[in-house]
Length: 365
Image (cartoon, rainbow, N blue to C red; front, side):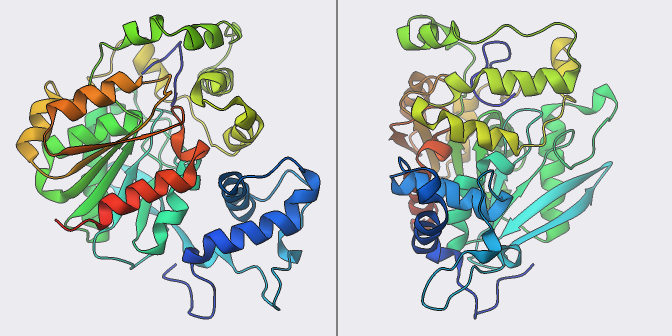
């Protein structure tokens, strides 16, 4: 259950004739104005246009908009987004992973993304990931037990170290010797395990909206806004199966997942697109899960010695900002970027979020 949950915290490149994703600002704005503005007069900021336009291209719209009929002006039609958005299923050991590859073949080092959750898929990260594919390949996949990857596995198959092993096998299957790695929320903790197990496979590491520590509850307990929002979360109904529990948890915790509650309807729209599962719930409830982080994450990252970006929302109610400052102070090879957003900073501020990631990955080693 990715995000701040009180119950469970913690195709090749497109043809040259088609616009590249680097045109996203321009195209998204034009789609927004032409197709969506009348339906939502208060829809005003560039960031909001970006998010809704990406949803429109990726998922379609819940509004009365015919994507295929959107005229971008100057005789230009909406391009075939599928040409930039290859998906495939890759067998890795005893499971198969559903993989999305954006900007295939671009750049020297692919960016591999570990989503959070568990029991979410990777799609909720797309508002922040799509813009990054202008200069590099971005590879995101559903982890075992999630989304469209292998499901209904034996309960012993759900462990953080299995995600690490799956990721390494996926890189080998795709012929990637060394990559940049981004871990979001729970995925950021798995990314620390991956660096510990495979230090030579990672060039640069982005830890987004995540933690290296367990002892952060006191920061939430002393935060009046967090405490006030938690009181508005409805109790979990009895009799839910594991999938229903996961879906309820994500929806109910939305008020603590983002900081700007004006964006809550759009965030709930994003949640509606996710293929949730309940596969990771039973091992968690039964206390079977191994630690999500290394025993000493600070030492692991110091010994690794490569560049680390800690990207965090100032108002993160899942892993409060204090954990980001603490890790930054403990790891000399890290830099810290703080956005005025909550846990889902990539959703609230996709432009700023993707710019921070791109600048870090583009820096000269």
